[in-house]
Image (cartoon, rainbow, N blue to C red; front, side, top):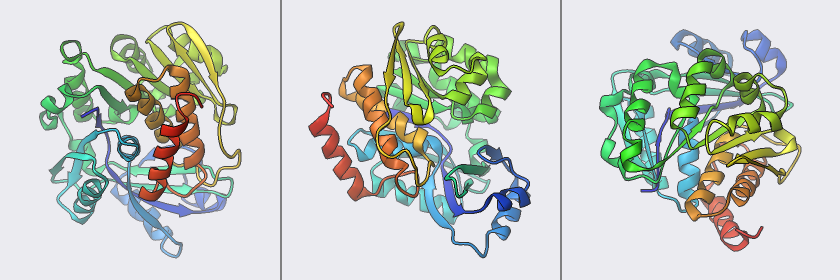
Length: 331
């Protein structure tokens, strides 16, 4: 098994709304908001007259699903509930071929309400539910030890049990020699855990992903190039995604600029970062250099924002897989 991920399996509820709707719900546009059961119910009740699309998601899960669809073996660990949504999630992973190490507990399966405004910006409201209870005891360490890459996101730091689960895997890194890939995932997470993330990247991480805002919070610099350069001093490979301007990759002290591919007018940006990570890790698994890893990542991110939802269909994945096999590493 090539990539082992610990993440938050969430049932996504995607809905198109107006800026006024965002204001009425007292949300900050373009952010990820952790919500409780009461706020989840308030939002769902508000959206009752609108069309809602349901799917199995979550940041790390999206990356694991996309990697598997491209032919890379993946394992997903996380917490779900003893409920219909939890069963739905397990069924979907089986259909997609992702190795399932989800652990059930007494809380409800988590949900993520994704509100997309007319400018295609997404505002996410996440109810962690059963994910909050996933702890070190739930980690199948033997699976982690067999992986080439261990992948997780900054969202894991919002609960102490999940932090313990991540650290349990990191403790065996030296004896197993797998790569550690970390997606910062959320600027507000950096605000809460800046020093922790700084130390984590410096001490345990081989590949770090950040968008320009997350990098700015971490490094205190508005220049994406300079952020990539600074983060690159902490770990071997640092990627800073700079929106429509492409991305920068710092690898062993050298900075590479990667252009964007695809549309500059996205249909839905949900999952763009997750897909970028899957493309880069796909390239690592295939043995490509970091420039081609970045080009693959940028290409796939450009494809995902041209559709609704954070995962490709099985049919679309097959076409993309064939395209990558035929066009890389010389794109």
